[in-house]
Amino acid sequence: MGLRIAVVGATGNVGREMLSILEERLFPADEVAAVASRKSIGVEVSYGDKTLKCKDLETFDFTGFDLCLMSAGGAVSKEWSPKIGAMGCTVIDNSSAWRMDPRVPLVVPEVNPDAVLGYDKLNIIANPNCSTAQLVVTLKPLHDLAKIKRVVVATYQSVSGAGKEAMEELWTQTRAIFVNDPIVKERFTKQIAFNVIPHIDTFMEDGYTREEWKMMAETKKILDPAIKLTATCVRVPVFVGHSEAVNIEFENPITADEARDLLRESPGLMVIDKHEDEGYITPVECAGDFATFVSRIREDSTVENGLSLWCVSDNLRKGAALNAVQIAELMLNRGMFRKLAA
Image 1 (cartoon, rainbow, N blue to C red):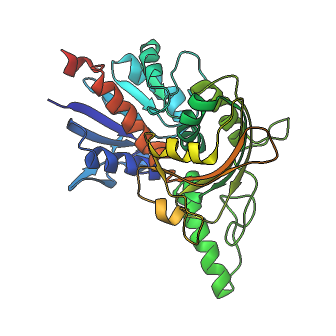
Image 2 (cartoon, rainbow, N blue to C red; image 1 turned 180 degrees about the horizontal axis):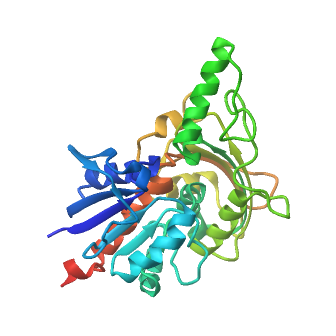
């Protein structure tokens, strides 16, 4: 017997990936419903070899559903996730709405699986920010071995992290440059084609953006509140796949070889690290893959115990949809769905 699952925001990039990953990983589902806003009623989305027609969130009946994968934005989640959770349907939310709420666990299964036990306060579990997810999967084994003091990270984030319209804007601007059409900026503050933009989300009073703040705050909640982290988040003209240049300072000694061997054996990671042309992974190679790839592992001679590395992941997968499904799998394996535990 399987679960009844609703995917809210099913027409978006992440919602479609959620449906795809549920089918790819053979998640036990007796029923999967595609749910979206009223304007998407009847829009068809794929679930394996099946075609689902989207239903209206405003009128959808969640009674009897076991799991809701929510990817409809923060405002929608703030309104609907508590209502859905109160009906006995566990919500795994991909937005930023609940991540820092002390009543809601923020979970990356490879990093803090036991945090899921606190889900029953609101029946909501939060998915981290896409750039945070791949970072903490990489940091976790290193922190366990040598204890991280400080992290400096620069991200190179693809346009898919900003939605379908952002991907269309990159394509449209790229074409416009080649045919000498005017460059139209709608989704981004500056031209994104053949450019990089050091600005993701809104600016805060201290000069950081909210995207950068999310990485700092979420890493502390997921991994260790004692870790100091500073981030610079940059949007780059890549369709899918976030990259990060990470510098780490440790309390205890650790060599590049030790880190390389450890990361090779750690869950969710693939190490591709050769000191030669093509001996590293870029976003093009990681798109469509489940893993977070780590390359360019090297010692930082400017601090006593330091490493630098490069990590890349498909942001629509590990950064969003895959992590949500992995949380559901974690709950399944622990017998936390009442229907299957009975």
